[in-house]
Amino acid sequence: MSYELIGGEMADFTDREPVDGALAAYLIGLLRPLGGRVLVAGPHATALIDALTPFAEVTCLVRSQPDAAALSGRGVTVLCGSLAKLTGTERYDAVVALDGVERLCSVEGPQYDWAESVRVLHRVLRPGGALLLAVENELGVHRLVDRATVTFAHTTDAWCPLGEFGTKPGSPARLESRLAAAGLTVGWLGAAWPLPAAPEFAATPAALREESSGALSAAAVASVAAAFAGRPVLSDPRRLTAAAIRAGVGAEFAPAWLVCAFRGADPGLAVPPVLTGGGPAAELPAGRVLEELLIGACLRHDLPAIRRLLAGWVERAPAAGLDSVLVDGDTYTVLDPARATGEPGAALRRFAHTLLAGGYAQPWPAAADVPSLTTILLAAAGLADAVGATGPAPAAPDSLREHEEQVRRLEEQLADAAVRVAYVETELIHRDAELRRARLQIDAFSGKVGYRIARLGARAARRAVRALRRSPLFKD
Image 1 (cartoon, rainbow, N blue to C red):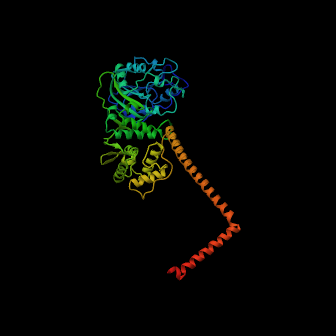
Image 2 (cartoon, one colour):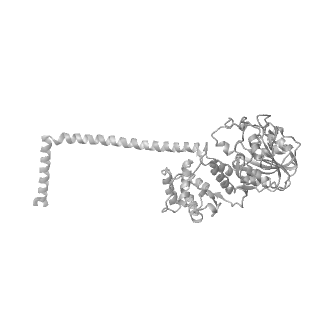
Image 3 (cartoon, rainbow, N blue to C red):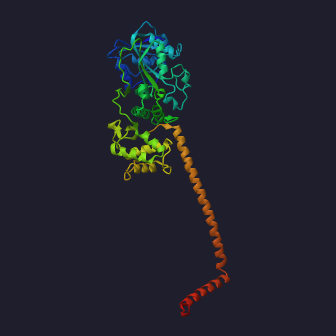
């Protein structure tokens, strides 16, 4: 056995879904100037641990004995047990806890709350050492759309599911305050999307509060769309994410917060304000997302604005999706030119699906299906001769609220059809009654002697009138 049992280890248990991702690896790479000894607290993907070994002496703390056995052959020191058994005799230049502190204690020992866990991590830091910490937001978008309640033990590792009743700070401001109270100086704090275990995009609260944060909104929504595609949710997380960032409270509703804090003064470890993928984001253009502007114009029934926006898109960026184009006045900027390889018909079909599935009001209520609305949008864009893409709808979150909206729309269509059917039935009954009366009259008169005499008399009268008109007396 090449790992050390420090007490509180869990023999027949494995932590699921360790934190992973290129963004986490980039943050870990920023610790290179600190060098020295690094403690990795909690379950982390092996790729993150391997990113540390070239420049630091790594010690891993895990509570699962099978996880400790899996790490023992990677050239790192492995401590297996509970956070409560970690003494302050060993000091580290950096502590990495990007999985948070919730999975550091075991059933074999005391259950530390968030503040107590942070105090232990602070205690094992050397003066000037750095702490990379992730804090899951219980009011994050991922929680708000989750169909399952977090205060019930759905998995074996959630034997104490406190949810929103825990002691974690509930906002970035409170997080900074709580870390300062624990003796830590926050050097960088970023709101991360789409999931705490797999962050792909992060930005500081100040960057998210800027009025021209359309590019940040598009990046966050894109990461959320990929993570939640096909996943059962209460409501569409893409819509909630975009709305929160537009309202200036994106950081407060982010799924997690990533923090780089120091025991003592900030040594000047530079972290960019916006991180995407595996590093700092390029310079982001100003403007609003085209799809959001079009939805707003549809809600206002502003047909000139719809035609103007679509015409500008067709002229400048027809191969890009509406959700990846920023509009700033007459400037249309494609966020990811490498992905701008689509057809306008496909983009407008996706937008038609978004309008209908999301329950957005639009100026063409008669267009109650995607093909009809796509045809109208093509015409509004000046592409009347183009053909809208066919096939299944694009992958999207399996949203209960959007399903309810579809049911409501179908109920309206059924109610409208029922009114039309009732009107047609009334007309048929009325005309059937008139036809029945006409047939009765025909049957009553067609076989009688009086009817035949009347027909002969009428015929004779018509001949007499025609003869009289031809006579010379009539002409005079």
